[in-house]
Image (cartoon, one colour):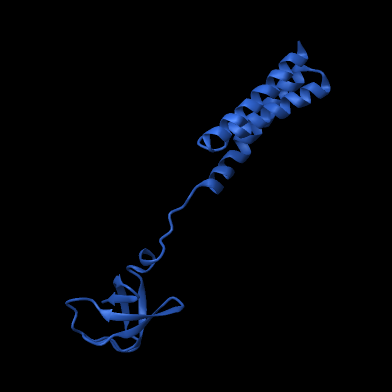
Length: 146
């Protein structure tokens, strides 16, 4: 009977891993890792010839996964939203490096990069070199600033 329980653990673990692979990590790898715990626990039970050792090993491995590794793994798999392209510069402040006038484009430095800039529509006050600006919008490769 002992080896039968261990074989059930091994087979059940492999089935869990196969289901996880079929779902495409939809369960967040929990099913695959618990399946791995069952498989390893069953294999340990088969090596020792004891169903109790197999069940205990599977339970301990699954518990270790849930207590120790699950939150760490979830944090590594979580996709974080990060602004890119236009979204990354909207609202950012910069410094004028070449004068910007109502109908005359200039240059602004935002972070380590210099960009072409024009005054936003409705803004008629020129910005001199060294003035602080804020990016309002982007048109092509030109920032509209205030």
